Image (cartoon, rainbow, N blue to C red):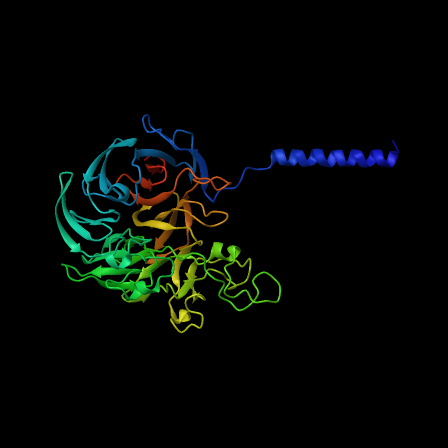
Length: 443
């Protein structure tokens, strides 16, 4: 073998060996700041699928995540005055009651049954409010029982409404009670861009308000496509977390990815994945969140491929499909959304933590992020935390993750997270049929 060829082979072998060594010593995939991988603890008797396999989750370092109860189809949750956790199960028409047995588990019993897709739950003193798909009722709650229901609002639209012909994409309702006793209920849109919802009676794609002491439900905020997340902040303001539309058309009259032809009006998968943002917004009387004529745009450089994204104070841009000339609604005049999440994140439950969580979290909002159904690569499910200070909501942090593998497969999808009286956070998961207990050290 010629000396030159031999030398080249030796050099190539050395480079290959170096590359293999580097690959072997490369660090594992990075986690969100401050989080570490832990094994989800599953008590005996709760290890049915998908928790029949060892599952890993990402939680703050030193914290633990365990299965507190198995509740198939668990959705929204609220703590009752007696220290029990109530969870709605829309698919079988029940509200269940979880009674803690130590820190490890809970006994599960049915509190209410025979309801029409119960979803939102809220307390004001000893009064329990339950939002069904067509109404909200108030119950007297005592001794572990909910009795004497009386209607707060009826006739809400759902798939059984004659004028909708069985079509209603967002029939589940959420409920919150203001510090003044007013009741707020989210009424989602019937579809992706169904503008007729805004002129319906009662209006859809809105947050309705029932005044203290009762009365007709009137729109408090409009243009809210699906404000499933609904909660009252420590300062008394009402907030919503919104699921924005799908398959948005590129709204700018310019090329998106090179070339000379305009991309305006095209549905571009790469653009759709990040647009529109999923806003978290503070509601004020009459606030308009834009749908379906305006969309929250997180691009720092609007319309530029690969732009950095900013989810604080998100401005609105016109929806080209529904508002091509901007005459339906002046999007630039809308106040920006206070905070948000990436497109198609699907925020569902929203609650506020009014006592400080440790390790620098403090007070803030908890959001159950369900994850995308149509984004590529998929948006991962998680529990998000938004810090709260001096009446302002800060930017998003991941509190719990790890539900989705790199190939997009999932073993769980959080719906809601609520702080418990013991200092832990309790998380519902309708995919895994579970309620988890996220515990800081020593709790």
